[in-house]
Image (cartoon, rainbow, N blue to C red; front, side, top):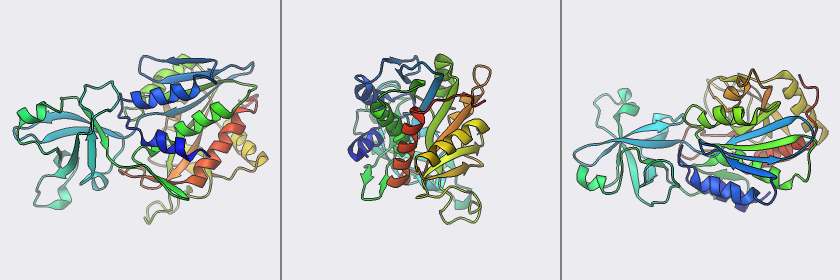
Length: 342
């Protein structure tokens, strides 16, 4: 497995609507192996490898949990809205890196700040509305020289890979790594394959909602993270996903019940090729399979997920073995005919 590429893709900064750096990376990786590449109006990348069979879409996302500046007070402190599911207790005190330019361009700045919280008498009442960003400014006028209303930022932090795991603010792009490597390694396919790298997952799956209509697939498999249920918490011990148990075949999350035919097809493919898998049932997590399966009159959809701990935090963690099993499964699926599954 190409750990250098995994680190590069996850290490890029890509707030929702500012995925340019990842988009450029994906296009550069696939320009010599795809038959067609286009970028849709929302910024999603659609790479096609032509085949004679059914139209199959493999989808992932390019963005990451991020923040948008919506107010600068007289003392130069920044109020913000967040994009993506983030937990208050996980983000307070975290560093962020800002984008100086208006939304829509790659993150280029090294302007940083810290997420702080107002002083509150009853700390149990603290919530997202009490958070602000401190970037060291002393006035609104000083802040406005560097930060624009509508400016974007993401969690700051190095992407770290050791012998068995990866920790990264951009870990959600492990799915993009899986798709890019699959498209590169796949010599041919009995299917008409579309590898879709969606923009704006963290804004109600906007990219997925648009690209599925562009591709109009016969089948879809969505690649993303899934919350690992092996962390200390009595509420989630009875859910099935565990880090280290392999790729997770999605059965259900709060946005989709996957098509039974695809669930069995993915499971059979894993068994035939010795890929370690488990099953995913998530009660609150959503995925790109949600908007995909209800589009265009209905699309049979499935999912392959990488278990991740701290999925709603600044620094989620995944085991490399689970990413590798997801990659193996994706490649075997791409080379197997999607026939008579409905």
